[in-house]
Amino acid sequence: MIEIRNLSYKINGNVILEDINLALAEGEFAALIGPNGAGKSTLIKLILGFLPLQTGSIHIDGIPHLEWLKRNSIGYLPQYEEFNRHFPATVRDIVLMGLVGELPLGSRFKTSHRQRAIQALTFTGIAHLAGHQIGSLSGGELQRMFLARALVSDNKYLILDEPEASLDQPGVKSLFALLKDLNKAGKTILTISHDLNILSEYCSFLICLNRKLHCHTSAELVSAEIIHKTFGDTVRLIEKDY
Amino acid sequence: MYAFIYQAIVAAFLSSFSLALFSPLVTLRQVSYMGEALSHIAFAGIALALLLELNLQLTTLIFVIIVALAISWLSQRHKLQESNTITIFLSVSMALGITLISLKKGYSFDLESYLFGNVLMVSQSEIYHLIVLALLNIFFITFFYKELFYLSYNAEMAKFYRVPVGLVNTLFMILLAANIVITLRAAGIILVSAQLILPAVTSFNLVKRLDHSIISSALIAILAASGGFALSWWLDLPTGANIVLLEFVFYLISMLFKPLIKGA
Image 1 (cartoon, rainbow over the protein chains, first blue to last red):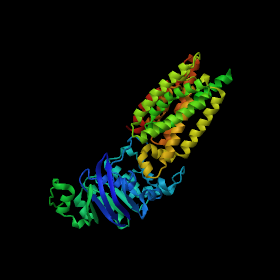
Image 2 (tube, chains in turn cyan, blue):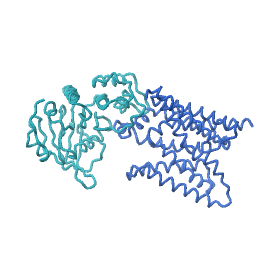
Image 3 (tube, rainbow over the protein chains, first blue to last red):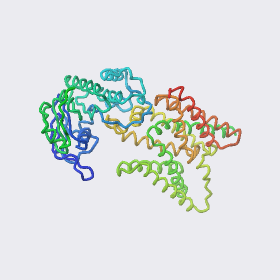
Image 4 (cartoon, each protein chain N blue to C red):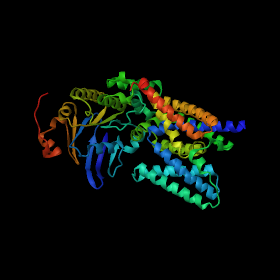
């Protein structure tokens, strides 16, 4: 379980997150929604230890999150990852990065690690690209490579920051179907997304954030009222069949 | 006579080899300007050692390591742009070096050999230092290869995946400083940074993997050192400058082969 208590966060005096209390139970497939600047990525970065806590606490499986993260990994798919496209790395090298914490300092990857990397790439559908240079991949292929890295160490938790970025509509559907399979297999998933149609189809738990936590409820309960509360009056809901 | 020449050849080989081993990592981590800055900062260390009549290489080494770690610490702690911090330290160190040397009245300092390098000036004990440095480089890169690979790829993500980024980066900075100080007599303050960049950019035109790039950089540097030494012997030209010029020629040649090898 990921448990957040009384969490607030400021950047240069501006309140980004205010008194967030949230419990994400094991086995959930939760979505974090909110307008740009609502603090979604900040909340995720706090959970993952990229940002230091200012006020409040985060516990994972009952342990302070930084302590937990010293011994365990969370699968993480960033919205954007800065890297040099000419960096001499193959797709397999980057997926193996997800296993580096399991190895002692100075040791080498073994055949079993490489096989796990290929399995993860097979799961995300790009095993045929394992030996390719990362600079030669398209946006969608990169996304699948980073997802394979997030999955390779078989973590309990998976956190994704706008995984639909760089994917077309069929790509988004197949990605969420993949995530649903992982969720059914027992993985707890937290994803930031703007695609409410997809979320209502796949997620079991919805967290509406706009500096404060507006609600957290099951996806079936997404109503116009909640959406307006989270996004403000700038959102116009349109009923549409795909 | 032959022992003297042999010593100079070994010095040219070892200094080029050591710098080339570090070259792909320095280039990929985009800290080549750090190499240039540290070589200039070493000037202040040399001046300090001369003024206080201390061991030249050891004093300079300690001075450069302290400044390298200070730059790294200041950049992280105060969120200063690393390039700005480096520029400040570079200029202040040069100013400090010139002031300290001018304080040493009546001392004739062979500035040119430090600026451009002179393999003929390398002593027997400095050869031993170069041998130890080359072995340390090989050990460090071999042992920490996986960690250095991911640190160079993306330090923030490497830390997230539990690579001990702080430890590996500190060791990297200390060894980078040691490489610059110990090869300074052979490579020169001004030319050392070229030897930290050219072998890597040449190898990246020819190979697709980091380990291959490290090996090919070392081979390119040894070839350039051989050619550079031969040219300087036959034509009575400065060795350090010839090595850099040959490395640049190899870089131009590698540009011609790049489309064939990489299909770019």
